[in-house]
Image (cartoon, rainbow, N blue to C red; front, side, top):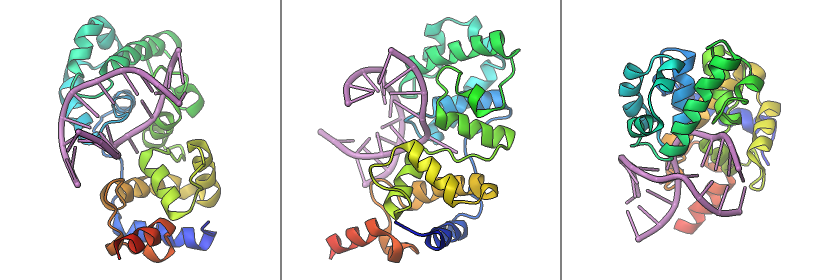
Length: 216
DNA sequence: CTCCCGATAT
DNA sequence: ATATCAGGAG
């Protein structure tokens, strides 16, 4: 496992590689962000942006999503995977916003997680990006990077990964760290073909060491 | 744990 | 052909 100094070194290296790392889901208000993040489950954000470009022109408010049939909403998001579940959740979520939150998106992680289709990761993203609440959303990239580098153990759950990161990273760096880890995972330490030969963290990366030995 | 699921990269 | 993609619910 990496110590604090080593983790610090990793974060600084990622900051140098991706100084402008930030959320890439296009949105213009908290409501659109919730919809976009909900749609992004098991799907690239590039594809989400392609779909929401048209979606957000047609649907502006929770009432708009409730006004159409489930089938129509399904067709509007069909090119995204898991579209039936997501369409159902969007409708439920909109009804909940109107019933329980006066049509506004709640600002705390606890309230956000009560919404249909919104789990821990989505709640963290919305709280962090839309409401500037310090948070570390552990998605597939953050989990993979954290485990490969040795910040977390392979058997750790996503909640354990999140708790470890919150313990080892200063609170005022949670949000940037979260984004830098995602960029590092998305563009460099990719799931399929990680670029270990050109990685500044190769020396302290246990998974990288293992992979380089295989190649030789 | 399984299921949901189309688009894209490899 | 198949693994992977800003996961969540039952």
